[in-house]
Length: 188
Image (tube, rainbow, N blue to C red; front, side, top):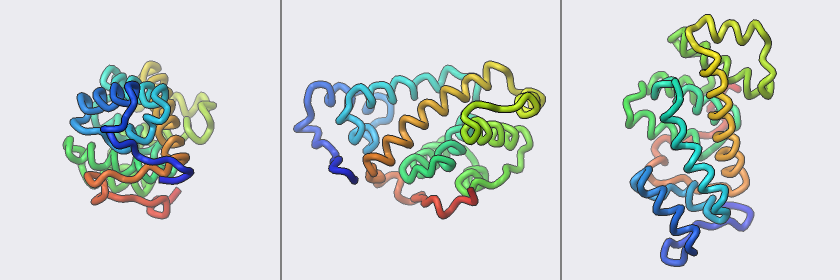
């Protein structure tokens, strides 16, 4: 952790933090360090948990969601979110080869998923100002206008978590350490 941020001992958590920790336990089965670190601002932690719950309501399946999330994590160079999402996705059945390519910011073998990765990259790097040709390529690959807007949701959440981790220097949970990642691993 950096900039004076520390993890809160649950025994010393205030009421708002305890509520955040309870929500995290229900969602993840434990309190990830990101939730603990962000609990210094219960508003931020609650927003993160609430927005993460919305991912299940999007048109994207688990693999597509991972492509979008991990692409953003890598572009934003988040030392915490890349290994966390790799661990969760791989435990959920996402192929290691696919995840490894995402972690290295390399093209994906599946053309539809590669289009999704490219469009997500364009959205992040161009701050949402995609060209008509870029948008048309995304639609031609089989995605929808709704899908494009849902990528905005993913970018919103990842901006919140990636930037928060940059400020706090969130310590990596033991569960995520086997897939530790550094921005040097990506060919950004």
